[in-house]
Length: 313
Image 1 (cartoon, one colour):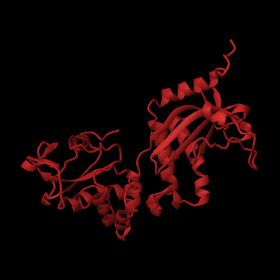
Image 2 (spheres, helix red, strand yellow):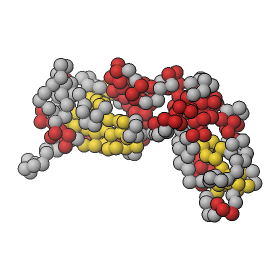
Image 3 (cartoon, one colour):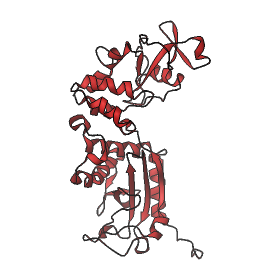
Image 4 (cartoon, helix red, strand yellow):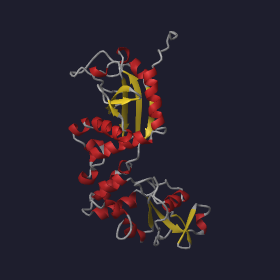
């Protein structure tokens, strides 16, 4: 049956790839994780202290697409294609990443095939992934010196988006002011830098990679926890640091804070509940009721927070 005027012919191969990928990753969390891992590998914050795209060298930026391609294949165990990057649902698929949405550089060998195109922006905290048939009508006629072509206006409208503007795991260092960043990185001590991070990034999720970037030491996760780490150092300031243990997550959510996922933390200053806190949400620890501290609450030692229950994730 011929398509009606103005309608595109069905693309059964592309539909099968779309359905297969959606079944593997219904909410996009696995693709998002692979993109986040790729950014973090490029920045290598634990050894360089870098945390944003502009700090990368030009050659590193051009390597981003390759890393995303590799990490997606590791995440989903895609078979190698004979001609292109992957074989998904028995279809050859080329994987392309661009720093601008849908500006993928599609090589001649991908002409006529399905392309899995990706985009992500760490500062915006978003990523997108879509499928496109690299047909003549979907590509611009003009090529670069490697004979690669970008999607045409028609091609952009033909993209079948798997996910559009999906949330990327947040890099909290991109959300802090320059004053906060300067204060965090001012010290030559990794432990003091980490303490300052949890002072200044309260009520925000702090990822494992951010901890590594700030600490710049091999035992960075231990330095976030108690027994001499940030939990011990900041307890006298009334600051608790919730991690991924079940009771930590429950306590954080009960206080209206974001829930820490695998390898994540969230810090906040707390105070014993008083009449002026009204109906503010509270948790019970050490036989006392605690709320998120407000301006004017005196600084007091924070309660101990035992690690109870299985790790999340």
